[in-house]
Length: 64
Image (cartoon, rainbow, N blue to C red; front, side):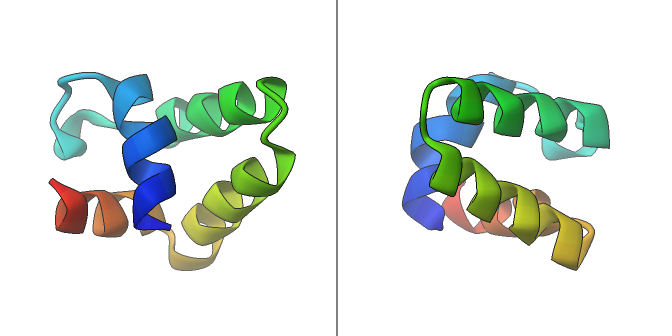
């Protein structure tokens, strides 16, 4: 999961602080990953966010 965050999420959110992100930003990242043909990765990223509520923030803060 951490590698997927580095590869797909961080480039998608740019230099914005985690506190500035909203759910729509994270959904947009998942949609872009899916559109790039990485459907399983998009599913995992989306599922992690849905199940934890703040999944991206939690994992991304451990990567940053």
